[in-house]
Image 1 (cartoon, rainbow, N blue to C red):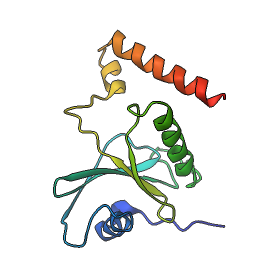
Image 2 (tube, one colour):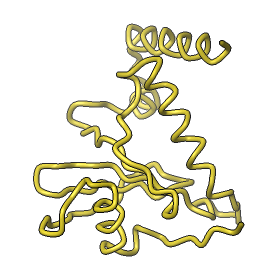
Image 3 (cartoon, rainbow, N blue to C red):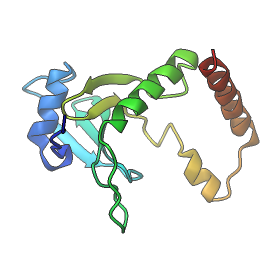
Image 4 (cartoon, rainbow, N blue to C red):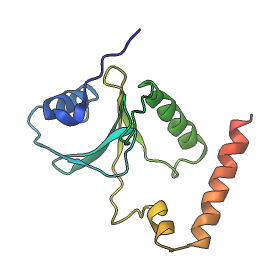
Length: 150
C-alpha cells in the first residue's frame, strides 16, 4: 500500500488537525509553529498553543541532502517504537510521546527547551566534554542494550 505524503510544515491547518485529533489542543487555541534545526530526514517543529509546547516530528520521503536520497516514510514508526522501548527501560532518557498520527506519519512529543536541556552533540562539537554526563549516558545505553536482549 502506497502512502500519500502531506507535508505538515506547509500547513498550520494540517498541524492543528493532527493536534486536535490527538486531543492536545482545542479549536480556540492559537498555534505558533517554529521549524527546529537538526532534521535531515524529518520535519521537526516546535508547536505552541498558549502555555503548551510540543515537538512535532514527521518523516520525509526525501532527505534534506544534496543528492537524491529517498527513504521509506514508515520508518517513523520504528523510531516511535524505539522511544517507547527506551522510555520503558529508562523513563527520563527520552521525551514523552504525547500522540501518534499514523496517517500523517508523525508523532508529537514533549518539547525540551534548550534553556534546560543542552544538545550533547553540539557540546561535543564545541569541545565541551562532560565526563560525568557521558558516564550517565553509558549507563543508560547499557540498560537499554541489556533489556533489548531479553
